[in-house]
Image (cartoon, rainbow, N blue to C red; front, side):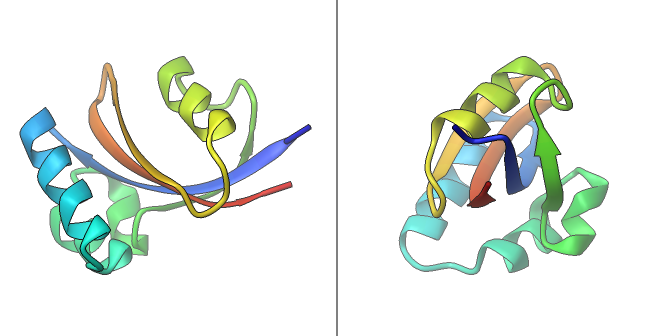
Length: 92
């Protein structure tokens, strides 16, 4: 069972922005470069990397995605903060 996840994200205001970024990533764009250029979250400066976290440390929709996908996966989810393009870096 996954106890911790290391994830990165790109936070934007609209679904359209998130889907545009997601499509760019699917076509081979660099996640960290996009995070630095487009994320509204301070983590964007670090390529979107949020480091390691366990259950209960993130808002539920974000956490559910992070613990429900596999290492290497990308996905999009909405929270009260906006739209997140999430990259699951590692799990342990």
